[in-house]
Amino acid sequence: MKMNASLVSRWMLHVLMICVTTLFMPEASAESPNELEKKARGALSRLYRHNKIAAENVDRAYAVLVFPEARKLSLGVGLETATGILFERMKARSFYNRTAFSCGLEFGIEKFGYAFFFMDEGMLEYLYDSRGLEIGSSPSLVVANSILATSFTTTAKKNGILTFKFNQTGLILDIGLHVAKLTEYEPSE
Image (cartoon, rainbow, N blue to C red; front, side, top):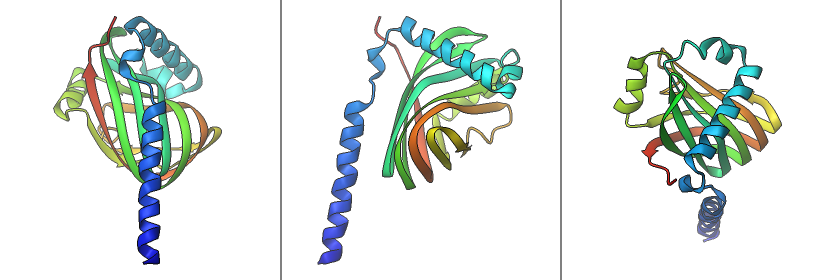
């Protein structure tokens, strides 16, 4: 009976964590398109200043999908949300929500930026062909600022797509598997 009580309390803790996370996560409609574009361009500028590979490839990229402020909360299971914008040849084209669920050895909270560089039109088609689904693992340790972070995902493994996680802050240990879904949406004015 003691084991069942332990499982129930663990399950209840996970449900509580997801509810709290959902309350604190921003909604896609909370920002106007202009506000989101301004944040996204600012995040990309910071990425280019601090990441040589990103700076070298920005002019060669056909499209860049950037999520300036992703947020993740984890306690055995994790929930991540972000709102972003797709730039084609640095012109704003469409808006996306990113939602990810994860499980593994993970606990903490973090905020970060996330960017995908599609190096040609064919690679951008991968986003549409996959229907925005990404599966992978993401070992990372963040204490205040990024210490160690890497990602092994179906998107990152594609030749012609570069992924960057940047501006990490928070306190999180994250060694787990995740499933992410990108969904295009129309923001309210």
